[in-house]
Amino acid sequence: MTSRLVSLLGADQVAGSTARELADRIRALVLDGRLTVGEKLPSERALALEIRRSRSTTTRVYGLLEDEGYVSRVHGGGTRISLPRDTWTPRDADDHDAIDLSIASMDSTPGLYDATVRSLPRLAALRGTSGYSLRGLPELRDAVAQRFSQRGLPTDADQIIITSGALNGLNLVLAAIGRRGERALVEQPTFPHALEALHRHGYRMLPTPVDVEGWDERHVTETILSGRPHVAYLIPDFHNPTGATLPDSARERIAATARSAGTVLIVDETTAELDIDRGWAPLPFAASSPEVVTLGSMSKIAWGGLRLGWIRADRSLISRLLATRPSFELGTALLEQCIAVELLQDLPALTAHVRTRLSDGRAAVAAGLDEIDGVTMPSAPGGLSVWLDLGAPVSTEFSLAARERGLILPPGPRFATGGVLERHVRVPITLPPDRTTLAMQRFRSAWEAVTAGRAPRLTEMSHAAVI
Image (cartoon, rainbow, N blue to C red):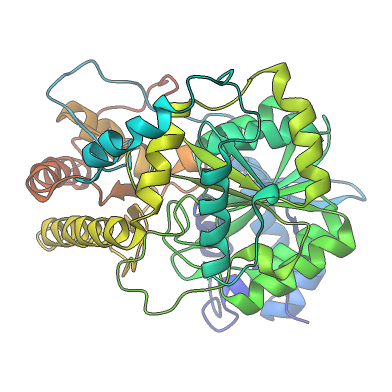
């Protein structure tokens, strides 16, 4: 069977390539995140047979990559992907005139104010209670459960816990079931703060590549079966940042593989309602397995300032979550819950507004890129952003050039585990069109500096939030 490496390289594409050219192609796959850190490569002999080259050529290829830090070779342990030691992460900017593209989130829906006013009698009726609610308001849990049922996943309110946002929900799940030192399967790229949460709870990352075309399902299932990760964190709907959607058939196979390996699937659905023109809607991932844990949020469809989310899980896990939650939180703010009840009662109007805003933002980004050569934009049928291909591993360099021009643009490696994805940047489609137009003007200026060799030198950069 053809190895994954040769499948990615393309046997026909490497015919006649020199050892240096082969090494460069493999290095590009590493920097692009399609080959993941720790992944085992074919032996020199096996690779030589697959690409019909001499053993000395493949030995030279792996030697070049080892010298550059992109593979490690251990006698008897094979050749595995690694990374050079030097990596960079972006710095917060103090320029108040800067356009911040590290935040992929819209301003509030026009209906938020009216929903807040309508929620006040509901809040007033709760004054006679303690104000604490570990599970969340019954009417809000009913509304969330009903939305799951409408999407094809029958759900009861007792399968729902209301949280202070999806990231808060992830930390609650990890606090309840986490095992320090275990492995976690994560997509690459993915939401950076989920990676940080997993690291904080002591997990070791097993990355699996995702691009604008979707997942490498073979890699996902093989990694689960070989690595036996305790948890897997996935964003299957309008994946952040690529915008890809995992098909129903793949969800079923991955769920079955996870069950057989004892892996808990933690599915982030914060972007699931952000459809622009996909043309089809998958079932919720949890429809494939009752053990799937689902995270949701109001922040992407209503407002980031509405710190409210939920967890859907089987009843046994819900009991564990309720037992764990008081150790760091006694419930979610009641006002936000009352507002969310009102908003969910008019979800079609909410999602229609989101669709219009995202469509306008996508068009503004596309218009800006029409004047820029060398940068490729995917179709982006939904989600918060577009995952641009820069055509070369210059993302960090480009991010620095953008920062000099008042554009805060996290480089591709910020969305990965350790320095890869240098060919990509994430550009949100959530800003108003006029603001996006200005952002793309600065984008073009930074790109011209990079392509002309006038970008700033790479230096160590401090950590920054990416939303």
